[in-house]
Length: 306
Image 1 (spheres, rainbow, N blue to C red):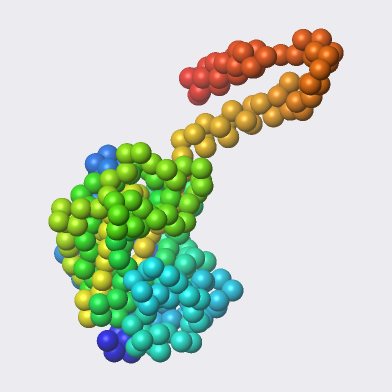
Image 2 (cartoon, rainbow, N blue to C red):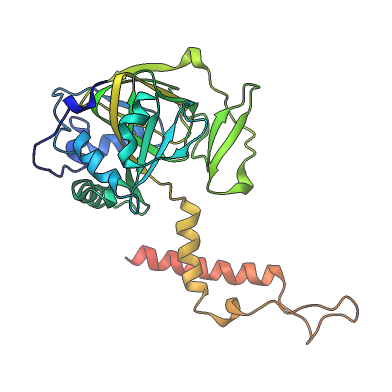
């Protein structure tokens, strides 16, 4: 791969999600694919992401390590090491895949794109851009993530193999197969939910396969097994949607209401091991559940009135 042969002199332009997805609409994405099954869009024009990002902008963005976190992997994602922007060419020649996080904070065009996407979706969670630069044959082995990942192929090519459905619906962890029918857990949002009884191990024979070329898009629901390797070389953006759980939204709304009432703010009164309850009979769990039901009824009525 001669990365110096690929430059981008076009002025930055800020597409939104509607343009990125075309000809699929945002409504079709949310109705038919979001959290359900992979979406592959083959580009009619190979240059359709050319003004969104390019290799020169990648190089400029990763120079400032105070903003962009650059990582490298020599073992297909099994482990990572910290990298510096000035070492890109040396690392690529050694066969490393490079991953840059938080690119929207260093590249104004990507930052503006994230803002547009957030407005189009009214998405309550964090949206960010990551970028993966890989030499021939490099990439990542089979795993799944806890976030929805939308891959935009910028330059070069990458072969993706992935399961047709998520192995776990809305997982709260990242996982790789352990070779014994189970998983090894990676990054997790909630360490208490690592044991999943309905886990589906990867079936490589049943994987779908596509080769992404410039302008192509692949959106994978969280929990979808996948692996990817560069063909020749590859530069791709990953528009990632951090999960926001329904229970988090509900609890935040309920807690806001509870915090205004001293009955819910009060501390738990200790009960002595002997001698009965202090100060007479304290409210029981049943009493608090009854109070909570009243709060929920009030919230429901307020929501219906809006």
